[in-house]
Length: 525
Image (cartoon, rainbow, N blue to C red; front, side, top):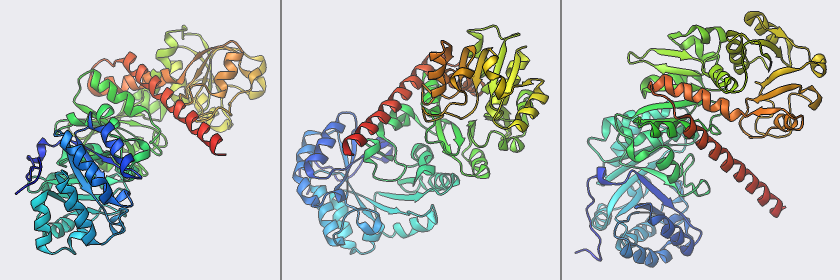
């Protein structure tokens, strides 16, 4: 006999939504207020009862909530501290809370393996008569022994087996996905890797066979390291559309969490109806990244710091332009698995400049001698510009000037020399508004092209505006180099206007969040 509107057996798991949003709270009122706000747009919630000091007090509210929302599917979780949760009670009291949560209308309950081992078979049978049971296991140190863990779990009859690892390298995601691909036909599995390096498993796990994935309400409400927000999973990564045919693209670097490439590229894929998803790959080692590219398999990669030069020797081929620059920011994986390298940084410089000046015979100063500077120098020389190079250390600048047939510039001569364009290809000023590679009296040009796009107004940009220069913002280079990458990967024209709009909005949100944090700090201090 069942109570209320509770249905004891679930639909097959492919009918479940792909995203389950974890709901926390410091007290029952806060928890239910969050659930109310979520319920309209999210039909699948997890009540983290272990976040409450007295979980039983929220159950009457959950009962009312579930009765009025027949469309909502809910998991009750009361994870004990031994398994990474916050519940301090015994296994018996955990079972009591989960049973009462099932009676209150939660269709699923999550019981960790450590608790299941200490239950009597009839206790588990009774619990499973009331709700669908997820047996879960969390490994906070690695992604190891997945098959062995599943074997241990299978001793306890359940509707779902949830195995969560921690990614210490990108390849751990591959390990998890291969496990899901192999076992998900025989069992209903949920599989994910925690941590920043495991973020891709939260998107690609469902493609490999995970019944669903977990998300946070907001960045402040994460219930596991590396958990993404439901908003990001749905709107940026279109997780509801991710399937076995979805092509995977990504940005690889160290660090990479700050990258706006996923926002801009996923917007382009969505706009052009490409069944693809673009993810951030935090690669702490190049070999780790390349193993993932081959195994996942990844169709296209944006390469960022610090791998633009190091990746060249692992590529099967590059175009002459990329070989000359000695840096690659775009990789294509062909159908035969071969890796081809391109450099679109030069396009990112040329396209915005062409809209404003005649590049041929223009006097252009490039600050820096790294990968971005080299791309700019070669790209401009190919179009007949008169290129000058100024760099903090003379050695790399001399080498670049010789190979590109450009000229060296001395810092001492800057005050009395003028240019059509000055391009900042150094990282000075990235992430701050204090540093500038030039002093105000050294900025003598018609245009300043600032390659840095965050912050939108660097100290150099501020000084240039005071001098009356027209500024080409770094956001334009970012969009144009990304647009060229998109064209190389998909063969479709890139929706540049959409890409620019998305990245402008993302930068405004980021700046607002920073200002908000500063205000909060002021109030606290």
